[in-house]
Image 1 (cartoon, helix red, strand yellow):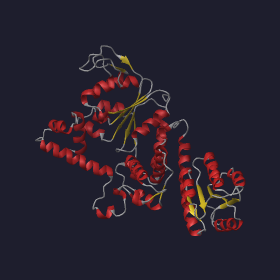
Image 2 (image 1 turned 30 degrees about the vertical axis):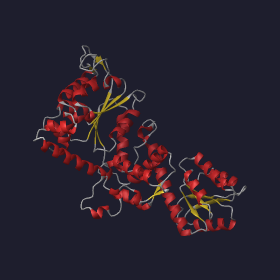
Image 3 (image 1 turned 90 degrees about the vertical axis):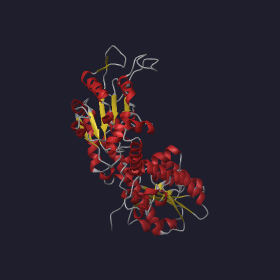
Image 4 (image 1 turned 30 degrees about the horizontal axis):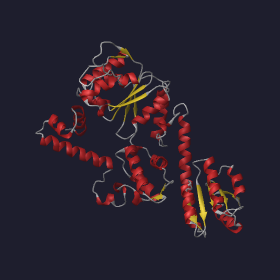
Length: 457
């Protein structure tokens, strides 16, 4: 006999059907059985891997018995995997069960082959939930005491290595440089480092340097005094002061201008800053975590990034693997995003079909975790059924898309191609004058310099 795939609790009042189910499934599962609601509640204490409940159960023989048993299990374990059985004409009650958190349902009379497909899929879902839970436990409560790490989901060697590196560096005050492609979750890693540090009870201040207009970057980071420039009607602290005692996260640090790089270096070395228009030095206590998707060593070599600053921010380098190199993580992440979107939108719990999951796993994900998150969100919002199929996925992921396109593009790749074409056309229309192209596109000098570097223009 093959080893048990897991422990299954069946609650069914018909003794002949109960015996039939137990006999059909005992070779694959370790089966325990009950014939009414109270017995079922008692056996729930054994915490089986899967639950199989009839809707109508004694003592009342009403559908509320099965639904109440489902509620009981879900209160005990919100991640419990429950499959419901319904009779003919009870489809509306079965759908109510799915809305209450049941994984799936099937209608009597029993088709053993169909039931095995459902239970195997339910067991796979349960396995993903348990692995996810174990990974978070392995990361350690001190490392991930809050929602900061809720999206650091994965079981791949690359993800396990990243979690170990976070744990090692979190307790230090050394500067960290996170390197990875766009969408790999650099801010989430920075938050996890902060959450595991002695600074966890102080502020975590994120700054997207690429989004700061060059004319305002210095004021945003270091603050300004009243009257420092037109419109400065009051003194204002900068991000360094807001991060006092905590962690300052500078994303896309390579986009900072030479002048701001110089002031940043001084702040790191002296632990003092001066507000724009100010006359006094202000002591600052911060831990710096920086991030980039550029090759800063190449930027140092061509003189566009300060070498002394590079070595100051790169005390501890951490590389974040792209999603395509995280084998086995896509189903875990997809399930995580699915549950999060359903909960946020107040929607009944949904699931992926096996074909949809296979399609997600085969996609190149050039936009990494961010692209996957957006794809799952779109699928959830546009799918009206409990199960998300291939046809509910964004068009770039649907069947036949790859066959029709000689070079399949993800959402992120299509956006990047559009950005490159728009920028190229604008520069050409401006006679090669990038400042004029920036004006026409509504960009500042810092933003267009970043985009021209990105696309090699």
